[in-house]
Image (cartoon, rainbow, N blue to C red; front, side, top):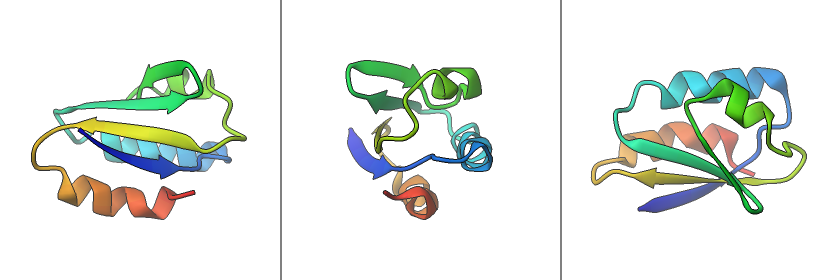
Length: 75
């Protein structure tokens, strides 16, 4: 498991983030405090407090390219 801190303060960033994560078969979770949602679910993401930094948890062996793509969302 690898984790990355990101920020999704605008609706367009959420849309772009989901577009990236949907291309991967592995499990990707998004955490905000005690809440955890599927990072591929746009509705789940909007249920989180997006004013705070979020943690992306990636459960995949080969995820270096995904981590590279997530750099544009880093907090």
